[in-house]
Structures are given as C-alpha cells and as structure tokens.
Length: 564
Ligand code: HEM
Image (cartoon, rainbow, N blue to C red):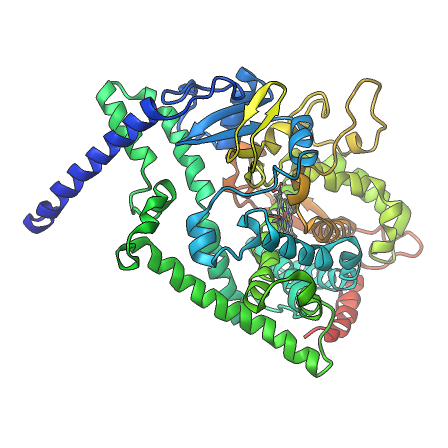
C-alpha cells in the first residue's frame, strides 16, 4: 500500500515516466530511420510479429521472421538496425568472409564498460586490445595447447566417473558434472584443480560470473524487442503507446536505463545512480582476478607452476600487449564462457540418450569393438571412434545451446545481395534456425549422428560441423577444449553406464522451447539414472565395471598431484 509520503513522490515520478515514454514512442515511430534498402523485416514502430505469443524466445521468433521474410532479416531496436542471419551460407558470407568489418560487438555499457572497464573479451569491441586478448586465447586454447590439457581432462573424467558411480542421489549428478567442468577451466587457466564446489575461490568467481552475465544487456534488449511485438494485442491505441513506451524503457528497477539512453553517462558521476553497483563489482573482480594471476606468478618463480593459460600469459605478456589488469581480466574468460556451455551440452547429451536409446546402444557397440571390455576409452582411441565423434557434433547441432551465438556488430557500411547493412548494425547468427535447415540437415528434429558420418548425397549441402561455435574471427576460442571434454566424458560414461529413465519418471521434454536460460540455454533440470553396465560376466577379459572405475580413480588421484 502506498502511504501519503510515497504518493507525493510517486505521482511526479509517474508523470515524468509517461512524458518520457511518449517522447520515446514519438521518436521511434516518427523520427527514427527506416532504410528501405535494409534486409526485409517488420516495419519500424509497429511490428509484423504481432502473432508472436508472449514468452516466445527470441531465436524462435527470429526463425518465424525467416519463414516470412527470408534468410536475412532485419528489424529496428531503437535506432539500431538488427540483422539476423538464418543460414550457414549467409553467416559464412558475412561473418567469415567479411570478418574485417563484422567482428565487433554491440556497445554494452553495464557489463562491458562499467563493470569491467572494457576488459572482458566476450563483449570487447574489435580493435587492438581485443586482438591482444584473442591472441592470448589462441595461445592458451588453440589445438596444440588444448592437446596439452588432455591428460588433465582424462584424470578429471575418471574422478567424475567414480563420483557418479558411487552417487545414490540422482539429483546430485549435476553437482559432480559441475565440479568436473569448473575444475577443467580452473586447471587450464591457473593450473589449479577444484576438488569441491565449496572452494571459496569458486564461490567468489561464481558470483562474479553470474553478475556479469545477468547484466549483459544484449539479453535484456532482446527481451525488450520481443515485448514490443506483443503490443498489438493491447486493445486500445493509447494503451498500446504507453506499453511501447514502458517496454522501450528499462526494466522496473530502472537499473539499465543507461543502455537505452547513453547520454546519462554525461551526467556528473554522483548523479549516475546506475554506476555505483557495477563499479563496486569491478573492484572486487579486479582483486580476485589479480590474486589468481599473481598466485601463478609466484608459483612460476618457485618453478612449481604447471602449464596453463596464465603461465603463457605471464611469460608472453609483452607479445599480447595487455597490462597486468587486462591480463588478469582476460584470464577470467574461460570461467565465464566455458563452464555453463560445457554443462549445457552434457545435459543435451543425457536428454538425447533418454529419447534415443538405439543411438546409445550403437555408440556403446562401437566403443566395445574398439576398446574392448577391460579398460576405459582413451583420447588415443578417438580416431577409431567415428560414431562417438559424430554424436558429439549431433549433440551440439540437435539442440544448440547458444541459439543466437553472441551478437556481432558491423564497423563499416556494407551491402549484401543488394541489401544495405549500415555501420553500427547488430548482427546475429541464428544458430537455432541453421540447425533446422532441411537442406543441410534433413529431418532436423531427429537426433541422428549418422548425418555426420555419411558422405553428403549429390546436391545436398554437406553438414556443417562448427556453426554451433559461431563464426569468423569471433568463433569460440574454447571449441577444442570443449570438444575434448565432451569426447572423454561421453565416451567413458557410455562405456561404463547405461543412461536410463528412473522407474516411475516421465520422459523430459526434448523441445528447445522448453529449455531455460538466456544467452546459453539448457534443458530444464531432469532426472536420469546411470546404471553400471553389465560387461557380460561370461565373456573372456571381463572386468567388473565397479572395480575398473575404482582402480582408475585411484590412479587418477595419484596423477592429479601434478596440479595444485
Ligand atoms: C559446447 C561448448 C561451447 C559452445 C557451443 C560454445 C559456443 C560459443 C559461441 C556460439 C560463441 C560466440 C561466437 C561468435 O561470436 O560468433 C562463443 C564465444 C566464446 N567462447 Fe565458447 N562455446 C563453448 C565452450 C567454450 C569453452 C569450454 C570455452 C573456454 C574454456 C569458451 C570460451 C569462449 C570465449 C572466450 C568466447 C568469446 C570469443 C570472442 O568474443 O572473441 N567456450 N562460444
């Protein structure tokens, strides 16, 4: 209930809000640009997406736009043109082949400028600082460097296997997988294992990671665009205008208003109420990241630092052209971008196995034929396991976990197939729509690793096997690390367990629209059971899976001593 005091504050505030809303509506409907040569799409101001129901995720809504307007569509978000690329061809033509102008990121005031002083690589605009950051990522996670982390991934996956084997509470599987994914990124970044999720550094970093992602206004802005499309449902014109005004404005807290109105940054600092929280966050992030990096520095001085991205960063700091704080921030990228993604992909794998048991049995047969029954699969077996490799690609294609990738931004005027794409446009690769492309992926809703095995039929486009990692100069630098983690975990889990539905549980939904998340999506939490496989007691060379996993676990713990 509003009391007298708060009403006196509320009424003027509401009046200001309504006037501002009407101004924004007027600007966006009347004064804003509407380039007739832009890629086709809903008109500015009033939108053709009125049929889009509330809650439709942006990637799905964009895909509906592709059906209506074609593979390259555009719409306005305030003054900015948003271009969405719905096919691998369009994304390759622009983001890959014209990478010199399509590799920036849209301006991001809260998460990038204020919260990290522009030092977070994921949101960094194209330029020298980004080049230095990206070279460091390549040095630390390119194919060669990634091969160096396989021993560690093998050790961690053996520990994971034993954790899963001895776990009786099925809802705790997720925690073991999470520890695995976090330990991998900590080890490759700082040469330091994580043995428990209660590790204080993990707790601190997790908070940082979350706040960075939550404040990524890209996500908020997308939600705002799609709220706009629903305004046609409002019955009365004036009501519609007010709703447009409110949806263009930031969410109720008013926290991100500066993303819509950057001129607020020109106010004296003490009047910029939105500035204080991200600056406080930046200060605590800086402290944490510097501490982690300096610890590696000290270990290097005493000759005790295992190979890691941090060690490479410190050894070759001049080459990357980043100062200490920039380097420390750069090293946070694997944690921010590499944990949730790996876990989401593993969730999709478990979901697919529940829905397609025949695929699981086929994969297990391949493993058994190549590896036998008395040991676990190793990285060296990868070349002889084409079905498992195809399955990993199919997991990432079937339900892409980053359905719109990360927004790119164009830094020069461009023309594509007679459509003009102005400097400053935001460009999304609609990875979700690409995964549904019938021409490249016939029967796209089927989970079918075979599509990545068969040579493509005449006239059929051969199935693209990296589009789910993005495009061009911004393509995921962690893709080799991610692939290796997925390979060793998936191969070993399939070797040791049958993945099945617990008695009495219903099959979880496999529909992407039921997935949760924003930039990265994953299935809603669901239960599955890992039943140790009967490796046929009568067969020669049979080893009890429990004993095998236990022995490997002990060996792994011993080897793990090489890391802190
Ligand atoms: C299955 C797992 C993963 C998927 C599907 C995935 C997907 C993606 C996608 C779509 C992008 C945006 C690319 C673009 O802008 O076009 C990206 C960027 C990025 N990814 Fe991944 N990723 C995965 C795992 C990882 C891992 C394990 C790491 C690090 C250890 C990582 C680090 C990064 C970084 C640092 C960027 C930003 C690159 C830049 O802005 O230049 N990713 N990823």
